[in-house]
Image (cartoon, rainbow, N blue to C red; front, side, top):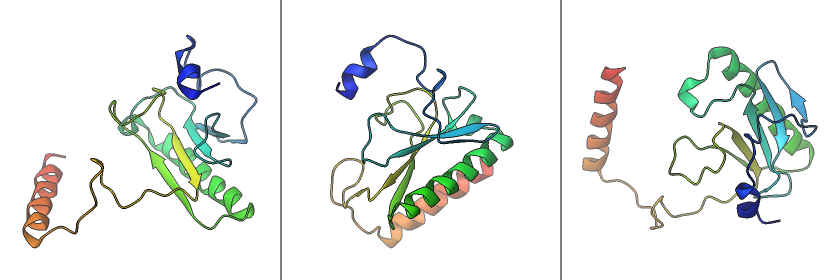
Length: 143
């Protein structure tokens, strides 16, 4: 079955449903594998509580997730992988198909030399860096 067809099946959140696909579990999160993987050994770390956004995680959830991310990387290393990507999508317009926050651990994933618009990436100019750093400073002052 194609992933796009799987997503059309009406049901509750796939990460909130009880599953026997759990590799390891902490108090507030679990490690599983992707049913529609980018790579054969594509792992997922999922907070147990249904939450959609990274900023809604509490400290206990963050600790559980961090432990499982490290454990997942150890599994990939023991399978012989040297390289991996950890990815989390936050927001509605990033290709996120399940509205339950989750982290991907994907071995040998190539992000590539293009930016988010599909253009070749370029090194920023000194002026662009100055503007960027100012934007971060203003944002930090609002926190």
